[in-house]
Amino acid sequence: VQLQASGGGLVQPGGSLRLSCAVSGEIFSIDVMGWYRQAPGKQRELVAIIPRGGSTNYADSVKGRFTASRDNAKNTMYLQMNSLKPEDTAVYYCNAKRIGPTTVYYWGQGTQVTVSS
Image (cartoon, rainbow, N blue to C red):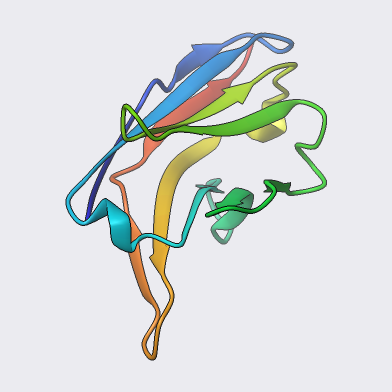
């Protein structure tokens, strides 16, 4: 499974961005997809997860502002980010997880989001 994230950039507070994550490879094996972020000097944290056949879950810090979705026909996952705040500044990573006797995680390369005036 390969993941390619894109769509990051510089945006003013209150603005919006949409991140995309193109997925290729053994897509049928993916059980959960998600978005994570890592700010400078901080640990990587969960932003949103989309279980196969389940409901999307969000971190409390982004609820009501971010929307994660999947387009299975295009093998692409999205993260629509609205009402962005400076504290949303981070490198955003897309993630795929295959659950089994050994759980396997796949990561994209990350895309920088900077929220600043």
